[in-house]
Amino acid sequence: MAVKIDTVASKSRAQRAGILPGDILVSINGHEITDVLDYRFFETERQLRLKLERNGESYERELQKPQYAELGLGFETYLMDQQHSCRNKCIFCFIDQLPPGMRETLYFKDDDDRLSFLFGNYITLTNLDDREINRILQMRISPINVSVHTMDPELRCRMMNNRFAGDSLRYLYRLAEGGIRLNCQIVLCPGINDGLALEHTLKKLFELGESLLSVACVPVGLTKYRKGLFPLIPYNRETAKATLTLIEDFGERFLEERGSRVVYPSDEFYLLAQKPLPDVDFYEDFPQIENGVGLLVNLREEFREALEDLEALVPLEKPRQVTMVTGEAACGFLDSMLDELRRKCHNLIVSTIPVVNEFFGGTVNVAGLVTGGDILKTLKGKKLGDALLVPSAMLKAGEDIFLDDVTLKGLSAELGVPAVRVENTGKALLAALLGLPAPEEGGWQNCYEGAGELPG
Image (tube, rainbow, N blue to C red):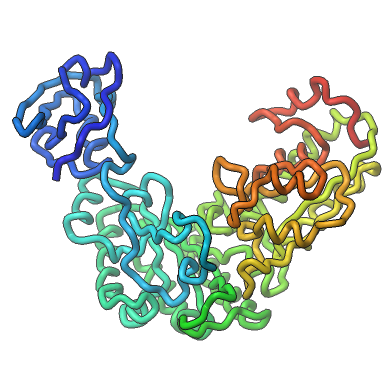
């Protein structure tokens, strides 16, 4: 498979060699180029022999360059071919539980090993074959993030509705034996893959040795749109506590034998079990924070540090009232986290309001799935103060738009108050609460230039 060149950078090595947009890149140093991983890996050599085609005629170019210097070729898509979609029909798949009428991209089921390495996406291994595994091993592509769910081959086939899902676990062993580092994810469904099944899974993962970096255990999310889908039940306080205990026990075993906890429950398990979240040291270097493991604890720690850094620089007083929205699950935790700020800033009034998720319904109660429409329903007619703070997790990456296509600007207009996007860091949250500009990396100094009086 060859790839079509879309652009050639001006004054690049490729342009100087006479390569043109529209040419076909066939191979580099005899290695066939099929996608971005092939191109980026083989492009790093100092001496290159490129085989290309133009108007059906083959030609070659030989180039010399510093190692890792780029050729200057661009392609129609980042991956240089189509994104690989998921072949499974998992009983817990969240995309199958989405309501109709949302953005088309939200219904795409990604299962692309290239995106696992490049962007941290999780893959099931069911899309791979021996050629792909050999390429990962040859290129030393690491780490790879894998959605495991269970290490019981038969149960994995049933959970994923894919007769090859169990057999694909052999790739997990091959990657581990080849020294590829692995982050794993387990979506737990009560009565299906928890309990004894989870014990079996964690024991098998333990056998992967030092290649296993981390394991995140997260509870299944269930919306109200499950008609015709596999009957699943949510976790309650008791079942969450039992599962949490099992996960923590295995974490202690890993810690004792390997010096690292490796296995972590997501924050949601602690909230469901109504147990306090661990201290910051529990999470070591937060290897699974993107999976909601230690996310709240990290925010709390950053917020405390930001408050300590800021304290000596805020001698002035100015009354201020703000409202912060969040999901039902973490509202109590966040409200308690703000108590220290309330004690220090007596003229600052902060209200944290949980938004009931009517859009998805079911047991969905996390901030990242709150929609603009539900915020409007919750806050319409309320006195919100000087600003409404909206966590960035509720908004599309790089755009101020919610899952239901309500915009932050539209939300602000409907509620009659500035709606402010707040990035998920303690410093950004504190700045937004105090009405300061977003702080620069490493310091607060830019916040005080023309900021005026602050709450004291």
